[in-house]
Image (tube, rainbow, N blue to C red; front, side):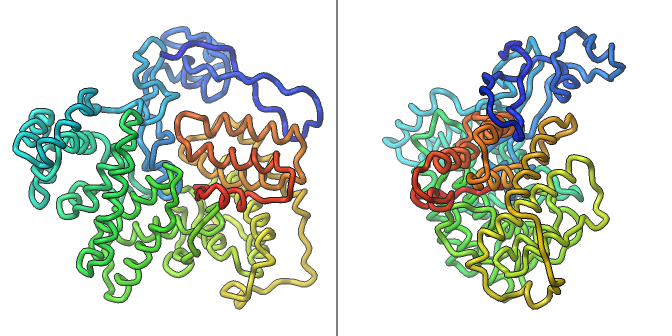
Length: 506
């Protein structure tokens, strides 16, 4: 159970030079939801706190809520489809405390502690034996979902340990992947039906569920290897490659690889092969349309640090021209279109010319989009020596002379916006992933940063990307620290390649 602590001190302002660094303080988690959102100390009076009443505010109470936190699938294309964390009010059980990740705060069920012993004994009995099936049947009990995968993939093919994992996945893991898009439709909503016909997807669902259990991390490598092998087999099979289940399996594989800090972009090659095959035979389903955008989002070249495979330009070739806001990321489609052309010689002008174009906005979304736009300009300037004529240059008319603020000015503007967001009480978890790219991009411009500004970025990271077991969220900060400490000229890209990691800033 979380305990009440002193109110937090915000990170040292980016514009402040000199001075001593304030000690870190952890935000109190026991106050009412109104005080939490305002980042104010709550007196915790029930049923409504006096702090809210004295200011004429509506006290939103203390009851538990589901918070869409930093689960395995929370970055990038699965943003908004991550695992819900039960955020508890004061006096409630701490088993699902809001500060934990999805693996420690589960909406339903858990793999039993005796399961590792069960798994060891299964090796002697043989996988999929009758005894294994009976044990798993007992654990599944009378769950209404216990027969979901019975038509094509018999439960007898799964060990008792896997059956328990799959039971969990059916009860709450699949729901973590089924949060709807803008129009209420999610391509992951039918994942259970797809599991019935795809062994590769079944393996990736088990891998996904296992990754939510840190107590079983020693099993993860074997499950990862099996999921990868089955996915590659399906990609090479003409009939199975045209199934939506294969696309979903590949997306899950990328997400889990990213979360585990593995090299994951190689899986995009298999997904790209599938897209080419489906285009050739004009195989388009409603689910596939949603999934193609997810694949394209993962391939955006500006948002991957240390990439070990060539960019496939999936968004540029398959996804451009949509209107509205991409539901998984909260980014306008028109802005993503520009990011997909980041290597084009005139892309900076396209960033400067971009406007929201009538999209519904808020103070918070405006700040997020502006930071990403400015970070895109910085990134385009970093890539400029490698730019070559291409799609954008053929269409864009650039007025002459064209001058834009120097990079140092852009860095200062982004830092100001980051501080503004930190102070904003309307910040919502559904869009904070958009902070990752600009915060990291600013950090890479170390030649323009003071020690106080670096301290601000570290404090900002601790607030919005807390170290709660999500290694992939801490990896960008570790790279920045290595960059800041480097005595020789280097870059974040070079450090990531030296460490053999691929970082998705999604």
